[in-house]
Amino acid sequence: MNVHIGVVIVVLIIGHILTFLLLASDISQHALTRFDRAFLWGKASQIAGWSLILCGEFLWPVVLFPAGNALLFCGWGLETLAMLSLRVRVARPHAAFYCLLVGLSLLFLAVPGPDPGRRAFLLCVLQTTMFAPPGAALLFSRFETSALQKTAGVIYALCCVTTLYRGIAALNGTIDVYRPADSPLAALLFGTLLPPLLLLLGGMGYVLIKKEQLSRTLRVFAETDSLTGLSNRRAFFSLAGEYVLRAAAKKEPYSLLMIDIDNFKKINDTHGHAAGDGIIAGLAATLRKSVRETDVACRFGGEEFVVLLAGCDLPEAFRIAERIRATVERSDPASIRHTVSIGIATERGGGTDLDALLRLADDRMYRAKHLGRNRVLTEG
Image (tube, rainbow, N blue to C red; front, side):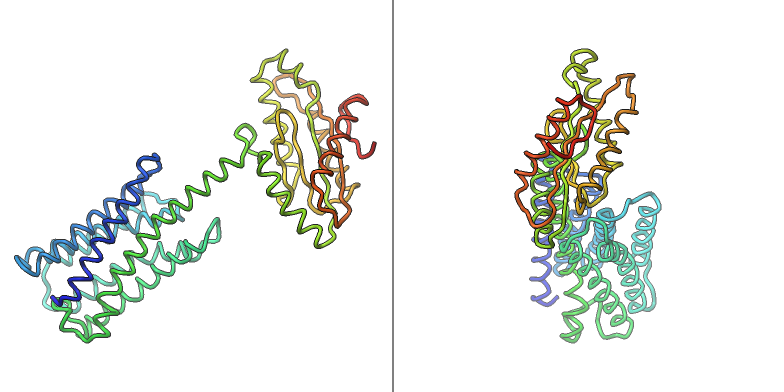
């Protein structure tokens, strides 16, 4: 074994250990899933596999080289299955497919053949088949994707290319699979050293993607009202503030609905807080059905809600608000009749004072209550 290859293997072992420790540290956050555990077992198998291959240069190579490669195949199967789980709902057929690939790989390793180059080619084809599904899933997914996930997909695609090149080179005799140091420099670098280094980077990508997903989940949790599933007050000001600036630049109108449940304290005192929570959740469901994806609906606090209607002038906003009011009036959860009062304020285009518009909508909502409740008010 060439000393440079030995150094690369040491780097691989250290890299896999660091990746293992980075993901294992999430145990303290109780964030590990069964696929995270599969990934950790995969990393442990690869650490052991590369260690056996490194030791095989000095003693028992006939035993340690095949054993090390067998552990590598098991580790790659577990790691790529975990990578696939980042974008695909992994079921038993997926696990069975990877078990089949690993089993065939171990079979080719265990059964000696008359043509080492052909056997190496078939092993490389099996490796490529392992790496292709997570690469495609990460690279071509369009739902909640990120630059980090796309980069990991590119890395796995390159793993497929370099591994397949290694197999073709072994079949043609360009690479000596038993003494790679005797191979030409280009074949040695591209076919022998590059694939495991790319896989190491892909494994690090898994850890980073998991942390990215955890961060996204925590952000959504921090910006979502737990009872209604709508945005909370903090998220509203962030989302609405961004929209207001865009609308002002385009001179687009938009409207705010301030919505409050009538006599809510009396409902709580009479029927209990559980009934009050049910009415709040029901109103949130009505808002989700009544607004578009471009609108922003949030629970502003207590029994008060606010909706930003993107691109809506006053007549259109009134129609939407009236539809919400009528829907609530017709609803009858737990036999508790309730209504809402709604105030509307509209920015006709160019204004960016969101706080002033909120105050105006709030004033009109309270005036609607003073005028008898269960109504929509656009002026006053």
